[in-house]
Image (cartoon, rainbow, N blue to C red; front, side, top):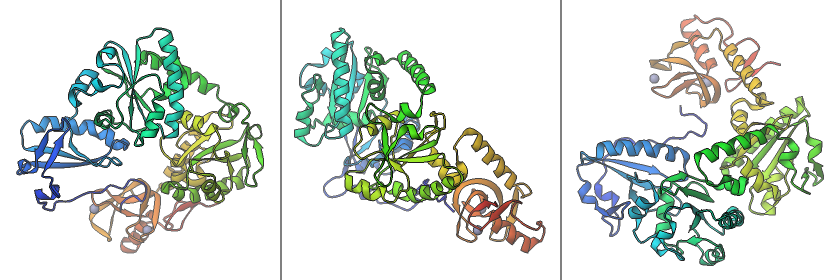
Length: 500
Ligand SMILES: [Zn+2]
Ligand SMILES: [Zn+2]
């Protein structure tokens, strides 16, 4: 049965579709990315791929280049077409994508020859031979407003130094007022709601705001998003070349090596977090503990689902070791929702609206929540995916170190000792079941969840708990030894836990 984890994949099997079902109301066409209309009738008899995808979806972005390659190879035959069905928020245009061009010139030709010609101040020729930052922004989005100040400072300094650098702001702002507000900035911009704004966003597969795409003097894309680097390193990030980024990486490594809990959590006067009763807890009092930073918000369903697990794990770990703490870093929209959500949590929190939140998000590259970052007893980051470890191993994951993970792996191997690698089971007579490491799954025998090990048929996505598989097996064949659970482990059919 499908993994109970996040990996939900929908498949659409067979079924006949009327081509007309692609059209509705008065529309009988789709569009290409050069804005040509393609009559739906002309697709008759072709093999069609419907590509449901969105620019904000990481797996989509990784998959798109593969699809383009296949598309390029097949489309020349003329009987194959791909229809992109965008799941981008508020961007419901369907486009047939075959994006291949790179570089500023071809990009402009590709989309709209007049596009940058309509740049509010200046013309395209002003940009030739320069390093250009295409700044995708929405001023009403706070991180963009904050970053705009930073970019303006860097821009001004580079100009003063006489560098050939220019910024073109591509505003994805919906409200004209906010657009005008952002217009106090010193650089060039595309006009408000210019249709090339959305096109450029799609072309560069924009996944986050703010984004600064760097186009080199030769017109080629130098870097897909230099925003973090600009934020962290200011003008030191210029001229945004691969060599420069390699250099910055070394600097960051050195910083990481010197990281302490204080350097992570103290910023000027801000030197404390808060406890349940509203008391201030000094960051220095937490030094020497393993600390989890929990980026979360009540409006985020995966966060709400994960919090109770984390509460349970927190309590278990605390029973064993006091030198452990969790700090909630809220992305809630207001104080009230923060307080309401925090009331479900037994640990510490960064005060709501604290300025350290945005720097922490940047530091740990928080692109999505929930996110759980583990800081070790020495103050160094152990992992930025403690959530994955908590989900996979519960409180056993503590203290989240490499060594601990190795121990867990060894225990899992130990647990499976004596179990057959393969077996036949009467509940699944078509195929042999293979002993397989699985995340979290639902047993097709007892229909309860399971984890770690499953007797599994990959072809049919069929799972059996080792307990269910071996017990029944014993009944039918009588050839499995007494006690199907490894010594020292107790299996309740859902989870195998170590007997204490
Ligand atoms: Zn079962
Ligand atoms: Zn099967």
